[in-house]
Image (cartoon, rainbow, N blue to C red):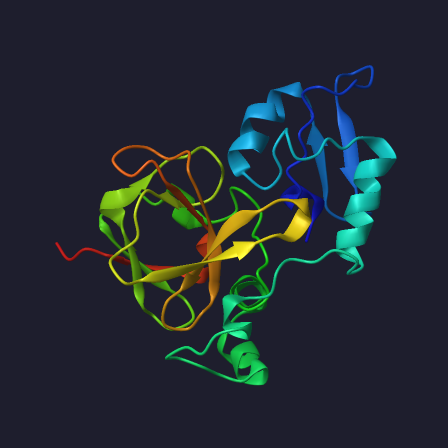
Length: 211
């Protein structure tokens, strides 16, 4: 978990002289300012009513996550039986390290890091773990959060569980066939569902529609 994934609500906090505060874990780092507030709330990881972090408090939380004192909730596959199942060693062989981190460890990719966030062609998005079709491009939209977003999954494609990690309650989304973690769903999406399925692009594959 990098600090780029810690959506810190900053808009009510005092700022440094240049209007920015740097949070760093010695490697990855992110610069936050008041203009980030809308984006950070849209990410849905931490909201204004949940927690406000500044200075040493933010670094303390970052250290807690980095060294395992706080950790993402385990993948849904840890608690349920699924149609497609592999041992942990087999999953590590089948997936890239980035895919394994998200699908099997409930990690989160960096915002704006997935090419699929910018994909505009018609087609179908499938699970990278088992190839089950999950979303249609017809329900994809630009949520301006940095992750591929959809207002509806395909029928019988995903399941959900409650994720209470990081001091807040969210609804985690997993692949119905292999149980791999895909992302989260929020209630701030567009019509007709009002939902935003915020997915990690690294665990999706895209098949363009045949011409």
